[in-house]
Length: 397
Ligand code: C2E
Ligand code: CA
Ligand code: CA
Image (cartoon, rainbow, N blue to C red):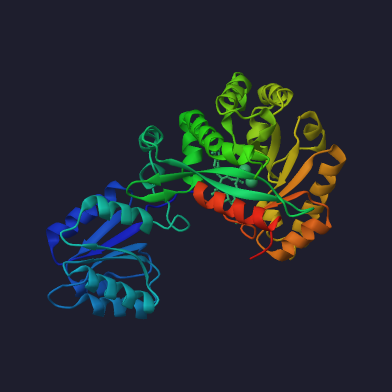
């Protein structure tokens, strides 16, 4: 299927500025057009525009009137407001437009800064409706490399509890990239990039080291018994088991305090080599979990061949376990499968007390999810662990 570039319309009476905005938009993958006349804009306007960049102050007509026009036309485009007025005026105009049902994704003050506009336009490209050139929409490999070097990578922690007694078993370490300009990037934006560019290895090393350093004291204090780290493309690295063990040693941790989570799909990609690496990890005493279970195609036979300790039922099934028969069937079957194969079963994506109660009634071992706690920075995780420790077990707030 051929995807057309998203259409962008600039409305500004300053023609030079309109041209600059158009050029920038084209550079980052839009198909731009511009008009300097509000009257022409009204004629040009149709529902095919994905993004509209609107100047609020034009000689013949004010921007507020155009906002009203767009609202009456049930405009669904992403709107970026521009103005030479001060920030308060822009803020008021933004609120006014939103109150009328328009989708304002950002505003820029004149004189505009191109980098600011670029990042707003990047956001304006709603990925569900618009497909920007991937190299221009997300972060680049170069930026990710810098991020790793400059310590922009952080680790958040999400607890998992025992369903038997509500005690905290451990934490899962989840990578977060805090970009100095764009704020937090979610892993779905940069993990695939890291995997494609070979940066996944240094990235995993950073996460593992942070996790060991930050969780080390909590492990020693027995606030938690284990910490889980995600690994994906590394399973073909035959040196991995030794490298991990030596890192654990540096931080004074033992093998059985680490869980490595590997997704079902990553596993299937490199069947033979990963079997070698996994077996040696297991022999060294590291715990292994199969992540996102149910989303790939492993068979009972394959599962038996792999030395896993744990199955993590994917959140897409857990979320709907109380409402959807099919999800419930998959959850029930996986719990049973884990029991038969002697593996513990963790449900991720527990978002309600209903799901928690259901899983407990089915004999699922552990639970993780927003209902228990969201992923948190280290300091917040420590507070959470201490407050649960005081009560003795997890209780819903
Ligand atoms: P995952 O391993 O399946 O991690 C669980 C994801 O589910 C996390 O997303 C977490 O924030 C989210 N989650 C937790 N509880 C709930 C809930 O109740 N409801 C819903 N809807 N979501 C919940 P996050 O942090 O965005 O991570 C996304 C994925 O990125 C992870 O999925 C993991 O596959 C990958 N990832 C994260 N950190 C790393 C890393 O250091 N290395 C590698 N290789 N992958 C990582
Ligand atoms: Ca995981
Ligand atoms: Ca998962």
